[in-house]
Length: 124
Image (cartoon, rainbow, N blue to C red):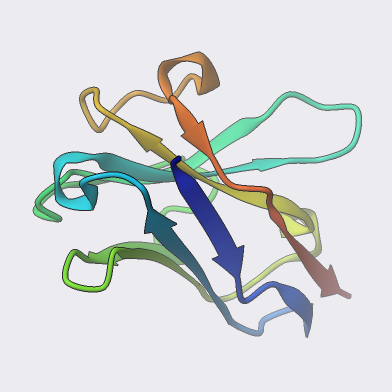
């Protein structure tokens, strides 16, 4: 079965950086759009960034544009999220997701596979 396993979360001071990784198995990774979402307690899951199957196109939420970078390594079946200039409001659980749709899909319902999430905490 499909598994998406996130890693790289943790505690960082405001202005710092973290790199999240998501290792995929059980699917033909190079055929899937990959993305990152985040969800705070009591809030809806929010789109963060996505990347096309080839890696040639990326898309970002306005709240992270210029600070976060999504990338992928199809040889390693892994997608990354480099997060720079982190802010306390970036604190939440981050989820990796896979879709066989267009890479600009921002609604969670358009994504078919999900990881278990990794906690990111940014202290002020």
